[in-house]
Structure formats: structure tokens, C-alpha cells
Length: 514
Image 1 (tube, rainbow, N blue to C red):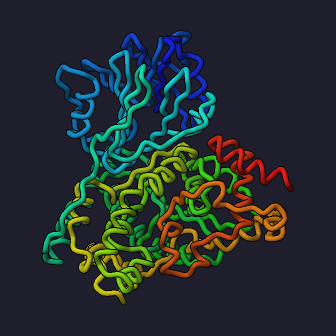
Image 2 (image 1 turned 90 degrees about the horizontal axis):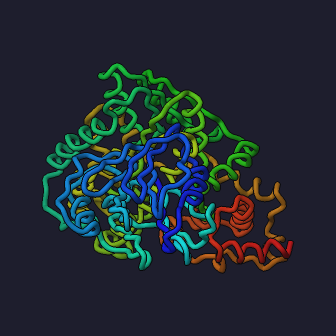
């Protein structure tokens, strides 16, 4: 999904065409809304489309205004006559699902992400054009180098005055409610089953990512159950090194439940070949974004080869139910109130730290990712549960107590439901191979000292809770990257051209010293 508006009243055909062809996402046909409010489906962009255009791979909804969207919308787009900005904001607040949405009246554009940011949108501008897209590379392709993410629950209004960012449908913080543990699990089960059914309805060939922990085994079981009831096929995918503990648990789980399971075992050469693909897909230089994406990308390559179109992600429970390894340490040192504040911060940054990455990895492989665990109804439930019911003491190393209880209730064996699992990049064994990959490409600690490389001078924003604060409560060696590895990833990002201008220039300065 993308959109563009000319502030100089020029035709935007060339820009829109270039953006469309630089998306990772491919489709036989794109729907185009022109400045004359014409809605056209074409495999080839029109020769002239006016001073603005909205482009989508889903059929637009035409009312007083024209709407385009990405993802899944639960509910109907309804509107009353009136100003685009006001009506658009009102419309968003009535919709459910995981989506990004844009609308135009022929003169200006409004675009927004849902309240939890389950589909990415980025925006940028210069003196001539204002634009947004679901991937940064579409904006970089037309010379816009200061690309920013539109955050969850916010809207951007593009008109002759520029780009205005306004609140649209922010997810609101909930008060904790005193609840009975068994009642929480019962309500959670009902909501979770509904979330899976809504997202899987009508899908023909479904893939599921499996790492052998409680999150992915529960999502795989629910996906398999629904698919079998509908007579549809499900294939389960896992990637990791040959000795990875996640691979061993995943294989054991699928054998026990008789699932069609495909495993890709990675070595140093495989990881070296995957890193440039992942960097290009996630459009980030951040170490955690890249290493967390390698196993997912490798698994999704298999799914794409099998003709799968939809992949079920198990992302969400760590933020919702208190699953990060450092949370008990936060509670022990600072108390439950401090944990709740940090946990809220992790949830509200999940759009740019997790969901953007997972969507783009899927798109790079021609897939669509869905996130049943991040359904709004049970995000509301989870965030109203007192933290003491999620992590029952500072010594509770596992956390996620309601989540684990539900897994056992629906038939997940205890060895999986109560497994204390490391982050994906550690459980897959990939983290331990990155040092070798960097050194094979001549990025060493000696080189770092020679050029006086400092990753913090390039950007001080960290796109993971582990790098923002989690490392202070855990083993720093697991969560803080060695500079020579980050330098190597920076060199790949520079080569792939997936950087904003300020980052590109800083990295170039270091590379010129080699």
C-alpha cells in the first residue's frame, strides 16, 4: 500500500510507478485511486493519474471518500458526509482487525495504522511531494531519505501544507482488575479461539512458525485444529542450527501431534547468505532486528516454496503476559509498579520493534503474516490482569501464568507449556554464528579499533526491549552486540541502500577508513 501527493500540482505517475515496483510485495494487479476519484484496477500503472494517487493490492471502498487498506478489517467502513480528516478519524475508531487504512477526497490524503500497529506505514516528504508506503524502500526509491514510521494508533494527513501527525485510535492503558485466575483463563480461551477463526477463515493453504515454546506450540495447535475442521492443509516450519534447542523441541512436538513439519538446518554459510536478504527485508541496521529475523526468513522461504500464502505468527504473549526473561529481575529490584511501566512501554513499542519486522519478512517471501495473539479484545483482557497473576513472584522465571495454564488446558504437554525459552535468535543457535560471519568478511575487533568505529554515533535508538533496558537485568553478552558484528551489518545495510541519509553518511565515513 502506498500513496503520494504533489504539492506543486504535478502528475505523480512516475513517482507512484517507481514506488510500486520497488516494494517487496508483488501482486498481479494493483488498485489505483486517482485525484479524480476514479478507481482502476490495472497490472500496469496508468500513464496519467493526477496530482495524487492511492495504490493498494486490495479493492478500494468508494463512498463519499475513497478508501484503500492493507491487512484485515473486521467491520464495515461507514461514514457521514463531512471533512475528510474528521470523518477518517471517526471511521478508524469503529473498525477492528489488523490493518493500515488510507482515504482521499481528491485533494488531500489521510492514512493511519490500527491501534496496535499491526501493519506498517512509513512517510516522508520533500519540497515537491508528500508520500507514504508500507515499506521504506518505496520511499527511498523516489529520493526521500528521511523516512519515519507512522506509529500505532496515529494518522498522517497529507495536504498542500505538508504532513500533519495526529492521534487517531491509540490503545488506552487499562486499570488492573481483581479477577479470579480460572475466569481469566476461561475468557482468554474464548477470545483466542475467536481471534484464530477470524484470521484463518477462507484461507486455503496455511503455514505456521514453530520454535517449540509455549507461544508457538499453542498457536500451531489452534491453527491446526481450525484448518482440519475446515478441511484445509497446514504446514509447520522451523529453522535453526543443527544442534539448536528450538529445533529439537519443535521436532518433538510435531511428531507427537502428527503434523506436517519442515525443518531447515542452518550453518555459518547459510546465515552469511541470509543476512543481506534479511537486512533488505527488515530495512534496518539494528542488530536485534536482523538476528531475530534470520530464522523467520529462512522458515518463510520454505513456506513460499510450498505455495503457502498466509503464515501464522506467535508474536505477542511476551509483552501481554510477562514473558521476557528480565521481567522477574525488574520486579525483584524495583517492584511490580516498575515492571508494569516497562511492560507497557514494551507493548506500545511492539509496532516498530516487532510487528514491522515480522510483516516485512513475510512480504519479502510473498506471504501475509497474521498475529492472532495481538487481537484487540484479548490485549484488553491481558493488560487488565494484575501483574502478580502473570509473574507470581520475583523468583518466577517463567511468567506468563494464564497463558501457560491455557496451553495445558487445551492439550499442550507440560514440557512445552512450561518450557522456559530463550529469544528466537538464541534458541535457534543463530546468535552464536554471527561472530564467525563478521570475521569471515574481515570485520574484526582490530578493524573496529583501527577506524574508531562506534555504533552509538550512528544512531542512539534501539529497536528491542533487550537493548533498551533488558540487558541491565540479564546476561549482557546475550543482549549487547559486539561492535565488529554491528559494523558488518552496517556495511551490508549501506551496500543494500536501505538507510536514511544521516545514517548512510555516518557509516560511509567509517567504511572509507578501511
